[in-house]
Length: 114
Image (cartoon, rainbow, N blue to C red; front, side, top):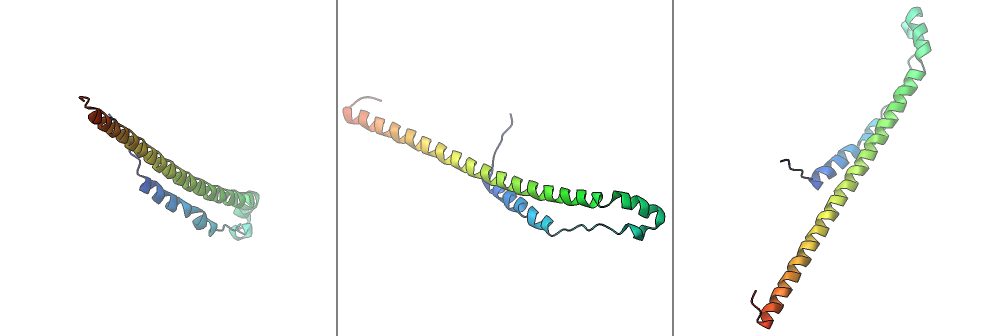
């Protein structure tokens, strides 16, 4: 038998951690190298790879920043939903217990054996 337990505090911690990803990646900039610095042979190959290679890296960094923000938002939403579910469950239990207590009190008032 396995047990699954959700700790909303851990989801909130993950939210904060992942929420910092966009800011961390936002400070990273990749500049295209000068193909001429590699010499004639390698420089020619580098000229074919740039600026596409640098643009691809920049696109990847933007995608990672977006992913980090999305995961952060989802952790926050999940934590909120788990908290809401726990509150609703507690309210249902209180209502049932209160209803049972009232029914028991009414039965005692009527002199009915429980």
